[in-house]
Length: 320
Ligand SMILES: [Zn+2]
Image (cartoon, rainbow, N blue to C red; front, side, top):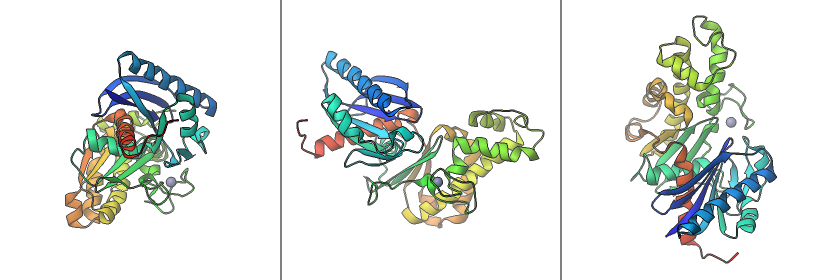
């Protein structure tokens, strides 16, 4: 059987898996993402080699490697351009290096784009032709699929839904702008907003905590903590503003929402829906189904596997 190596190169975690054409994960290795460029390449080479040996043992043929990276990138040339959360990857011709090290063809795609493809083929949006994928994690990632085609834009940088401005004079963003959706609807934004707003909520269980996570804000919200509920209201409000605009522009059939912070779904989604209903045109607003992502942390791996299978079937494979 033919398989591909599929790698989700995250800011914190690294996943390398052998995946079949129908999305079955045959073997998988997880590791932390090293901080230095050379170490990242060494680790990727090692994990890919270990997975390939495993494939050989069970008689599978590894056709290529696909990498999903949290970055703007040139997928044609296989070069990572800017990775704000993993700066060691900036300007890295990752495909050329790994093709040299491993002797197989290597393909590169943005991680949120890969997740969008993953959810479309194997997850929440099966059978949907036009969809948006939003990943609410450390940052906010986005992927756009229109008429079954990943919309990459003229330079391959499209889909940065997290950097739509929802508050013109709002919080400064890593991208250089201010008031981006990422500053209001990501896991890090949940923590920041709770810290900023807690002065008005002395009764909150988060009021005097030195450190807390987005998950703790969610736990507090589930117990009815007013500060936490206000934070999720803000998160949903701003997400709704961004989605209403996207719905008017793109008229998608579905919007898939995933990522760690999407676990607070029931606390923020009513506010998101309210803004969509208030701001978007009626017909596209009714059409766009809001779906919870199904593949969790495996969306990137499965998506890049599908992309890699498509690439190897559409291009003549030169010997490297
Ligand atoms: Zn931004």
